[in-house]
Image 1: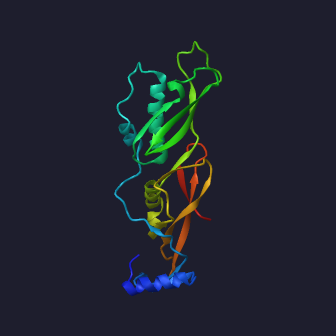
Image 2 (image 1 turned 120 degrees about the vertical axis):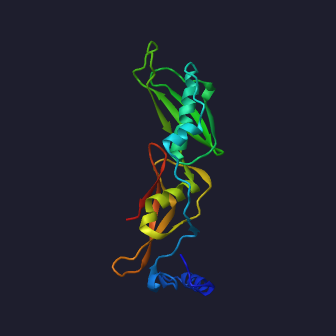
Amino acid sequence: MRFGGTGGVLALTAMLLAGCGSVSVTGTPASLPITGTPRPVLVTASNTELLSVAEANKAVLPEPAADAPLVQKLVHDLRKDTLLMVQWRGETSGGCKDDTVVLKAGAVTDCVITYEGVQVPWQITVSNDFKESDLLVKYTKKPLKGVLLAEAVHARLAKDFGADGDELRCDELPKVQLVELGKKLEPKCQYRAKPVRGGGLVYKDVGLEVDARRGGISLVRAR
């Protein structure tokens, strides 16, 4: 948002504190009225893109050797999966309970991947039809928590809603924090919608939701 000067900033602050839902700010197109209250953190454009699959693969090199133990290969994959869940670059490490994978039908192995200081729990579940004579092991990987990262949310907001408004904002978000799967988070973001057919500017909310299966953070346009 560009203002006409210091006086414009002070005037806007005073009107918002007074509880006004619609204001007119010098410097906006034709001094259009603005509906809604801006959230505290202005999200600026960033040259940093969300993490791609190719970047995630490079981030956890080298690959384990072909004859490496299964647990090493799984931890390597879980580190990549964690990066892709967050969609942001970061330091990762990890391991599984007792440094092994339980190879029995339906067996569950608990693993933990550390991403930027937070410990992300994962479970490896061997298929129910597994037999000790099998040459291949079928299994599923599931995160037990998601990761909320402010930088990743800001980048996603710019990618998904940058074309819809001339200003992007969010509530204060943690630098990095574990979150429950399948939950709608309390913090929100918003974009300031461009005027349509001569109308005013409107702050429109965007909700943050945690995917129930993969733990990723989705930004959902408020209804």
